[in-house]
Amino acid sequence: MADEIGNPKIRGPKDPVKKGELVEIKSLIKHPMESGLRKNKETDQLIPAHYIESVVVEYAGKQVLKATWSGAVSKDPFFSFFVKAESTGPLKMTWKDNKGQSFTAEAPITVA
Amino acid sequence: MDQTNSVTRRKFFHTAGLLGAAVASSSLMGLPSIARAEDAAPAVNIDELIAKKVGAGPIAMEKVTLDIPATAENAALVRMPIMVDHPMEANNYIQTVLLIIDSNPNPEIAQFDLTPEAGKVSLEFRARMAKSSKVRVIAKSNSGKLYGLVKEIQVAAGGCSG
Picture 1 (cartoon, rainbow over the protein chains, first blue to last red):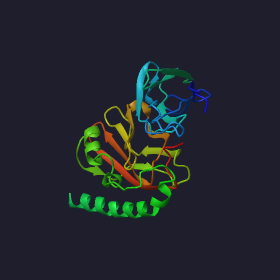
Picture 2 (tube, chains in turn cyan, brown):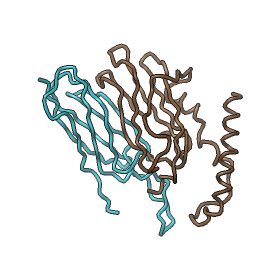
Picture 3 (cartoon, each protein chain N blue to C red):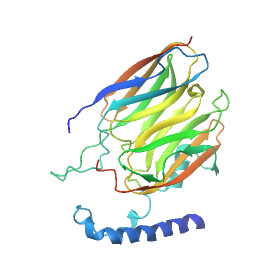
Picture 4 (tube, rainbow over the protein chains, first blue to last red):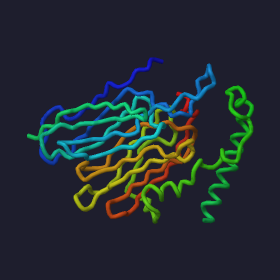
């Protein structure tokens, strides 16, 4: 398996939305999400834990949501949630893993 | 207390039976073939885990939904669509949502800290399940009220290898 990692993607509303509208945000990132409990079948050694520990969502500069994950969240984690569109501004997500690597992505939210 | 004990006992006997049936194949998979007592019970005390995360107190079994089938096709990728039917207003909102899988080696799967700006509680992610287990969702409001849901999810084979 290739050690592909990163490439965060966010999908928000394509078109301008009304003020106060609840909009769904979907996100995806490539990550092995190794729990640290799995063995390498050839060497019989535990594969070290390597998973995303936190996902922070900021909208128009303010933190609106934070997810704290364990290694039992599935590989290449998908995550969707809602935000209330109050003003035009970027929706920024930051994924951080237990090895200190972090990934960010942004999607615009336009309030008409 | 009594109730908790009896559930644990029943679960133990149930699991013991399954393990008995699985002993023949387990050596092929390189798993220990001796059933340890801990295998039956969750690795940590679930009540204590919940109390540590959101505080002890009565949990109203309402408002929370986890709309998935009782049998998961792929244990490595079990959809967890969490909804909490609760306002998200400045002074009345859901602050924390926890997802716990009792029988996973680490039952503490995910925590979500929310603000009213989320607008509504509708979160979805996917989790790995080591084996069939109770899945719990606990939601805490900003005033400390707890809402919850327990759902028994069956899996064909553990998802921790995938």
